[in-house]
Length: 262
Image: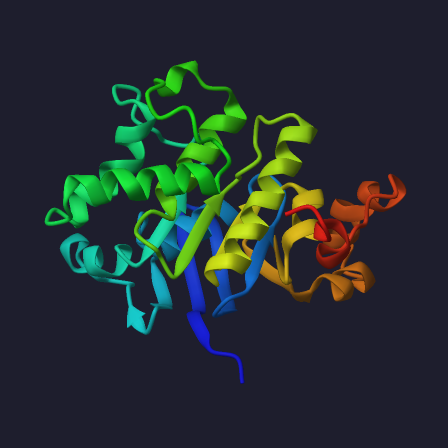
C-alpha cells in the first residue's frame, strides 16, 4: 500500500479578488516523482509555495510529513522544513560564497557539531554526485546556468531530505542541458528514494521523469494520474496544453528515456 507523504485537501488561495487556487485536492506518495503541470497563471507556483510554507493558504489543509502546516507559525515550520529540500527556479545560490561554502551552508546552519573534515568530505561527495568534482573554489557567478542548477541541487540534498521540491528546474536552460538535469533528478530520486515534487510548464520533463502528473488549470486540479493516462485525457485544457508536444512526436516515457542514461 502506498504511503501518503503530502496530503492537500480543499486548498484555497486568493490575492484580493483574484482567486488563484480553488479547492485543490492532491495526495503525493512516498518515493514518487510527481510533476505539477500547468500554463502561466494556472496556480502551480502558488501551490508549491503553500506546500512549503513560504505562503499561507487562505483555507484548507496541507499535511506535510504527517504535520498540518496551514495556520502554523514560521518558527513551528522550521523542524518540518529541515526534512525537505527546495531547488528554486533561479537556484538561489549565495553570490558572495564559492561553490563549497554554498553546499556547506546547510551543515553549518543545521549540523553545527559536525567536524569540519566531515563537512568537507560530504561536500566533495555531493559534488561527485552532481558530476562537478573540480569546482569547489569557483564563485557561483562564474558558473553556467546548468552548473548553477547542479550546485543548487547538491545543496538541496545535502541534509538528506525525504522530499525535494523543484520550482521550474529547467527554466532558462538549453535543451541539452535541461535533459542532463532530467537525468540527474531521476538518478537522485532513485538512488536516495526521495519524494520529488516538481512544478513546471516543461512537458518534456514531465513525460521523462514523472511517475504521476497533476495538471492545474485556472487554480483547479483537472487531472491527476500516471503519464499514460494523461495521454488519453480528453479535458479541453489538457489537450490544448500537450497537443503541440504530441505533434512534435516527443511523447517519451520515464523508463524508456532514462534507460542507460543515468
